[in-house]
Image (cartoon, rainbow, N blue to C red; front, side, top):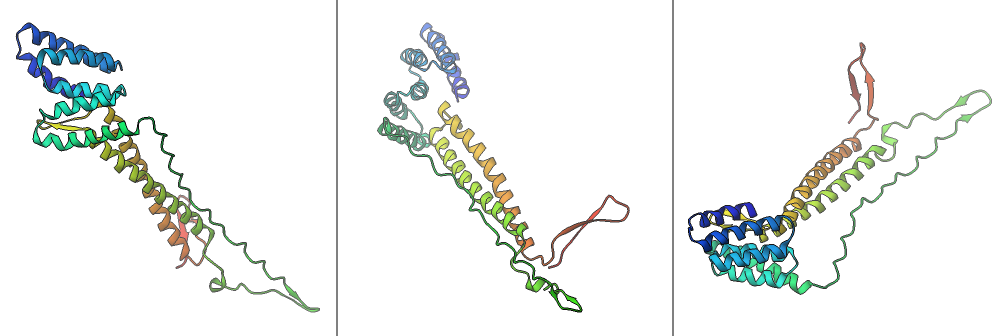
Length: 261
């Protein structure tokens, strides 16, 4: 954001030849260095003097950025309102959202932090213990054992169905939570940025929202992909009548998967 603002302001200062504008340019550059060093109050002092000498309206926007970073929300609000008078029509709606965010932050100053959202965990799924096999029936002459009841008599889907189903539900839940977080962070970042003469200018405070949007979007995509794949696998196992096995082919190097729908 500062690099874009620097290009705009240096373009104005380059056309100025008198001592006042030259001094204003020097003060602006000093303020930019101080801002990068995290000395926001000193940057404000330099930019305020540069504005007094040059009357460049964009300096008001930079001053507001530094004051916001320093926690001086009321001063930042005042300078944003002053800059709004010089903004173009397409900038004002974005500025209005940022002004509203500052007003809300001023009201919330000193309030207790919001409680963290509860973690989303998957509900554990337990499978019933298999019924014990019937004991063989013996007689004096012969021993009789019960026959295999066959696929139709087996109870419930295999264990893999529950495992992959639980992973799928957890993946979709985590993906949904991070997806909402990414959308929220993206909206907060857009609310802080301003479109000036075809160029989007974002304060340093928008950086954390942009980074959160990227990280949450990546986690959401991975979680949703894993969740969807796991649910598909669970459905496949649910309809397999015989356990899926792996058997080597003669000659080695290849395997086949057996099962029956």
